[in-house]
Length: 338
Image: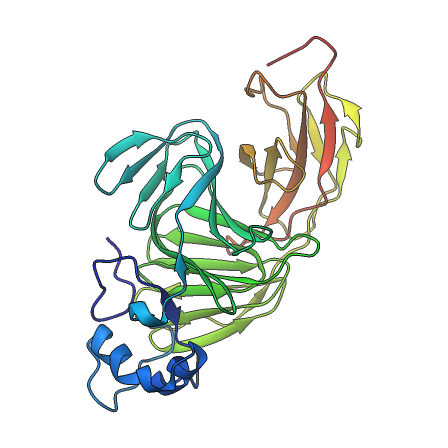
């Protein structure tokens, strides 16, 4: 399992908090509601008296400071996905399945799954994360805190995407740890990828923080950065804009799976995404192509879908994937099912 940049991790499902630049154990204890709990935080994490953790460290909070622990749950699934759940073992993933802390979820080469992580006390606000094909992650902690929601996952391999907040949604902190570094955001709208020698993060719609080797880097919306193994985050790069979809037009009936969009001058390639929903929490297909068109011989979709949404993002010469285009709706011909 990936180390979460902390000396000792408790076996129980305690809450966790990522250390930002300027944070101290004393300040973290005060923010959690008990200024006198600094010693307990140090004891929980193997820190000596007076020691302060580096930025990017993920601290385990004592039970007395933790929020209300909650199981995550499967929101949508398509293709091959399985989970290894504590005290149960390996099982096929199904919609609405609860996922307690320390559950490991993996997608096959054709699998997609969206997991609903922490949910607010009233149930009206939540945080979701989508695993793309060939991805494995471990749910370390999900909780509803006094001042919001918090989730920590360890991304072992592959790629995840986090949708932005919806209208009226309240912030919930999602922290993604890889072997190379940590990404933490309160407003969603980002991607994290495990690469051969590090990790890559793309901030799509809002800003976030990336950490590596005790260094914190702030990314604005529309920027990306890499964290090499054993190194600090690289300088931000500006993500390319999306190619404007051309065909089929919005609201058209999909009679042939032919997609095209306007060329982006400096693009190395493009990523086409299809989903069952406009928010892309129910992913169906993701395909990388090297020209501004995609014409698959056939399009395999679930049998209960009546229409799909599609969008495209641009890939630059450094491998960063940009902000997706606005989604377009397509209907299937009457009486036709995949």
